[in-house]
Length: 111
Image 1 (spheres, rainbow, N blue to C red):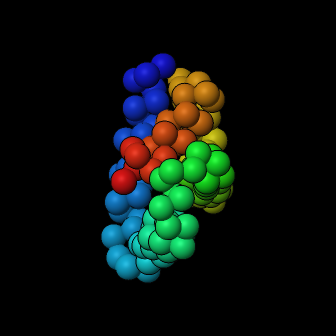
Image 2: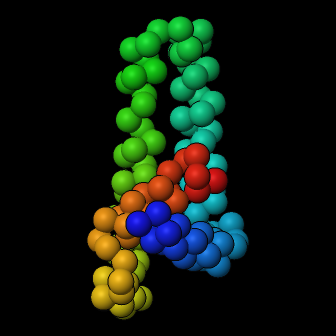
């Protein structure tokens, strides 16, 4: 199953590179998200950002929300390109497809 997940991740990376080669492909939106969640909110919180565990736990959900929306959009894109049926008819399990898309889109792996 690991090889199946890696296959989906490789497919998603290739599509991401080919689709987002210009500025209008979503890089500006990504930079805005990084600026807001990675710079603005920590500056507003001050030292409590790293000291208080409740602040860390409160903002831990943000990457998961962002990744879930991208994964849902990825499946919608597969359907628009008429490749979802082919992907689901392949030997790959549904779980491997979902995990591969989710892991590739997560902030630590997809960047």
